[in-house]
Length: 132
Image (tube, rainbow, N blue to C red):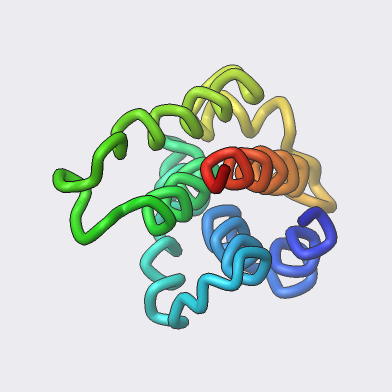
């Protein structure tokens, strides 16, 4: 998924949340409509203010779409499945907040590409586990 992450994040200039969602949409054949993917745009850059990491929010959105059966409250195990991806991301990045993650990963030429790539890889592995 790294090549696709590079394409969306660097070449096509999508933000971190948009890129993770677009990569996952392609990888898992989710057929999300453009309007659906745009719902994640405001989560880039830590909700545009350094709060929750957009790449993590994008990954959580994909897990949600993949496991919800009608609505969240009616989906058995939903909270645990969401908590699982969030925990993995926090373990990898040491935080869930953009303001904490960005100083360690941001590079002038590639911005937060490494975060987008790692989040995409973690998401891919997690999705494979969920499908078992």
